[in-house]
Length: 104
Image (cartoon, helix red, strand yellow):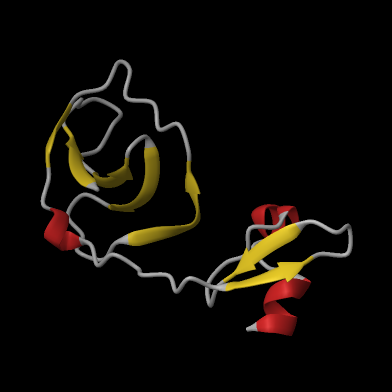
């Protein structure tokens, strides 16, 4: 995990971003202290044309997921359900699914 502060200027405020590789996990708005965690982290965070400086990772509390339970969906696919997420397409699009309601 790495924290980056946007230093591009102009239309880009100095938010602090928490990245796991190229996946945006959370950010803290400029002049705020409370991080916003994405329910579905954003893959492929694009840094082209922008400037960043190392940030303070201590602004973020890493949310630890349990290993979860494996469930079999109605189509026969296998999904992993944790307290906060599910790997099924329904959760990806809606942020909730029947697997979470039934198995957590």
